[in-house]
Length: 574
Image: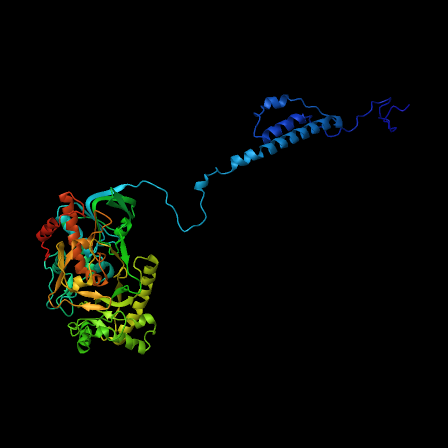
């Protein structure tokens, strides 16, 4: 036989040959799938096995098979399905617990935000006491300055709080530059009170000019800020600006301080006596004192006071001399400037402008709106540098000075009307042709808001009838300016101011000074004037200090002791 290759080639081996192995299918390492499934389940539940060491991995048996019959993998897959089903049932059963754990912490029903309502209840909290003093004066206008200086001079530790960045009130904030413009020949008033001291100090410091038609002084509103600073510091008063009172503190049925807010936050100021010189009786109102407020139809209007530069002073003076205005001119047409007088005032010269605005409307320079029809009023100081200050020409009736929204509208409307007023001045008034706006007051001038109900309420008959009181703490001339009444004090007549009009029967250890003292509207037309405010301010500061010295409250302070202290300070009380 051929011993060669199987195909008959001579080199092929002879005889039977072993069967060649079939090609082997892809070999795989055998794995325990049930263990792998267990590991996966543990991982899903957050439990991880420790990592296997390489040596352990190498020692694992590896079995290579050509085929894995169903008898090997079906049982493992069945076991994995059972474990997954068990895990799913466990997850479903834990779902409520997981929801409870993952949800935000439940809040008490009372802490949940309530639906929108008209009121919000502030949570209670403690606040620091930032200051303590004997006498706390709130409001740094003419009344507040006088009260603080008087209290300090009477020996009380005194603090003065003001909401603006300067003291001076209506002078520095509004721009009304005359403490007493009524000084025509024949006037009788206190010559040595703190109000007169303010004028004399300003004159010495070069911060005044003469009023056009009588002996009154016009104060430079900006310079008076410095005068007020000197008054406060020289008297040893502790000042605090940029601060507003938001609540009153009561202890033992009497006022014991106030809560204030400012850039430093909210704090308390404790005081033995509090004097409200806010003009609006804010502290008295917060403390629970009864107050009155006139109907808006009777209320005096607010004014936007402004100043102009670029005025030809001589040309304007020449114009006013050739076109003289008197107090009779005020009543040439109706409106707020129409005045009832005692006839003796009507021939006196007055710095008044009104007809000029009518000419500007007729010429179409400014529109004939109701507000422009009311333009008119007084001018005041003229400087050699061409500045006309304290132009009191823009008025708005019926504004509530205790309503922030109404004050906001009045501020914006007043500025808009001022531009019309300046356009009219340029057109119709010689000397103003090249003028321009110099500045506004920091806020509108408010004349008429709250007044306290006092232990005695002044009335018009007291002012007009030279009233005399046993508890007199000062005098003021028969000067009435408001509610369409103008009485100038040219006859030497004056009335006494009683301490009781500064005392609220509802709140002890509180005194009120300035235009919010108790009285009817005619007496208010007198007591609202800035020099009258200095009279009540000095009296209130003195009474507060004396009550501490005597160990009594403001309701029971000895009037004779107050009067003696006022006389020592140079006040005329009779």
